[in-house]
Image (cartoon, helix red, strand yellow):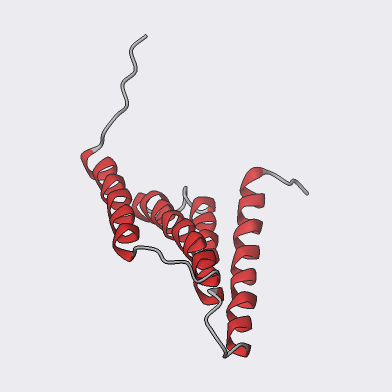
Length: 122
């Protein structure tokens, strides 16, 4: 049995989805206030899906393997930062979060569809 990078990426992706399921069920038992567990759970699910899409990158169309994986990772990271803010009842600007995700998504789309190449001259 070989333990290579793609196997580890797939295993971590499945583990992330399992952790998301467990975290999602915790919030249902707590009715007094929102601790951000469902937001955290969706963020972990996004990261898990990103890792699984990275694992399947060679088998999928590039829209799913590249754009889908990166957009899912951006969403997961954002939700992972929003969840502690909800837990600590800190105020955050939803418009800034949406703007940051929009800039990231539009940059990914521009890179993919306009086929930008990084040209370095030495």
